[in-house]
Length: 144
Image 1 (cartoon, helix red, strand yellow):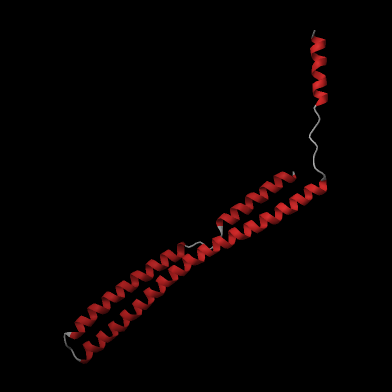
Image 2 (spheres, rainbow, N blue to C red):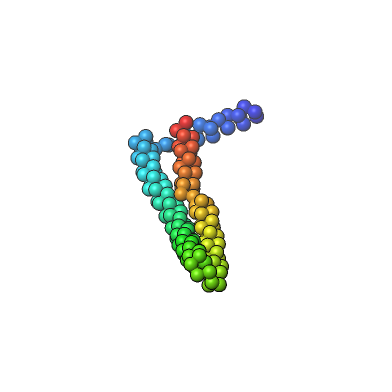
């Protein structure tokens, strides 16, 4: 009985043939097409990431410019206050000094805030770099 069961198993193994693989030319053609598609997708992702980063940088640069303008106005008022203090020695200079000091503090705060936010903007397309690295690893695994 064992001989019959063993012989009945053998034909099953013989009947199973390995799946036919596509010709090498077709595989290379597919690989080429996939690489072209992957390259286009990676370029589109990099373009999108850079666009987002540049928009953030523009916003922070505008805040930085506003801070600089406010600081300049404050310095101008402080200079006017100093001139008034020295030339007239009247209470009007005290008011100009207070206004100039306040505008300068606001400008300084805006500059520091804008600078801190601008330094956080990442211009490197991190997702694209990660994706390309993963793709390269996958291709190396596929080749070996």
